[in-house]
Length: 473
Image 1 (cartoon, rainbow, N blue to C red):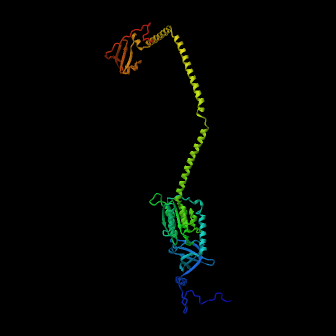
Image 2 (image 1 turned 60 degrees about the horizontal axis):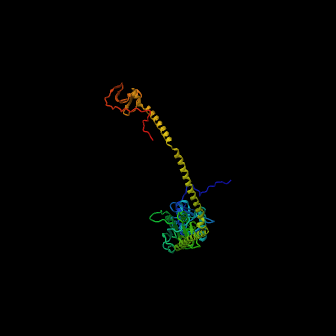
Image 3 (image 1 turned 90 degrees about the vertical axis):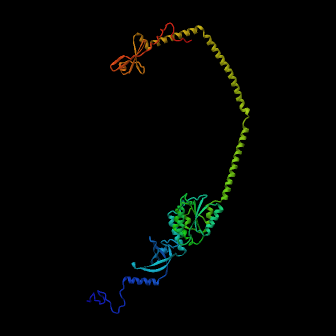
């Protein structure tokens, strides 16, 4: 039975150099270096056509992606300097032609192309990118009608984003001057080539960032303008950064990019699209002469309407005046009623005076002297009785029977209790024929205080048969 594991002298445990063997052992690094030199020497400059896949831009600014077709895939890298000069924004699925050099990446045993320049693979690829970006932004609502802002009727300040050296700005300024002179602020930008999209977007954001009332007036309207050209020439206005700047601007924007048949994504995002830059100036402001003519026409129509209104009122008033009755017809019945009322008034006054005179005569006849004397006697008797009642109520009448009335000083109020007398400083004893002042202490009454008092006049006794008061006749 043959040995299943025959001994092979060529298989050794430890590698040894064999005389005459030209295949010397190479390190991995040496092999990678030789491959790199060979690949770069053989493919120092290549152009590849393929579809972008896995596009990614690192924070360093370098771009990493893959180029593929239906048969193969190759990695690609684009350094920051070259990526910044791209005239468009690469996206996955876009077919491009990349120009660069082939090299290897020893760290992963892979080969890749270092792209120095990248272009869209024909107009078809450019339109595909256009439609793809348009659909993406439309899904986000950047082209929605409800986002559109109304344009001001006569903006005092207009901002223009365009090239300062082209014919576009001259056309806009001349057209504005002819129609309605206004204040124009131009933000100069590149409108084509590398970096133009970023400049246009920065200009739009710059206008939007101007604060009202500052040293630089804030525009009331912005015009983004460029002359005509191919789709490649106008591509800066299809870039996403420009479209988003237009959509986010709080100031109304008119897009006037290219000719009437040219359409960019900037047109969709703007509040209004103008077919040409000159048309944008015409849309921005009205014709001042037309406004003056319109105002004059309105003034004339207003004056005619006012005059016609007055004339119609006068005609209606005259027509109504002709229908009214004459003055004598209107006032005749009232005059007659006034005369009748005057006559009745005279008769009424005479009757009233006659009745009053008769009543006076009857009252005078009733006033005989005997009746008057009885009335006077009755009044005298009532007066005497009232006076006697007053005399009986006089508190000093009781003093004639030996009583005294005690009053306190100061104040003079009459005291009716011993307690009230003790708290008084000085007491006055009023007798029939005068008063005496005494001092008071807590023990009671002391000796009378020496004081001279006046003897009151003695009142005459009243005669009962005669009244003591004057008789009123």
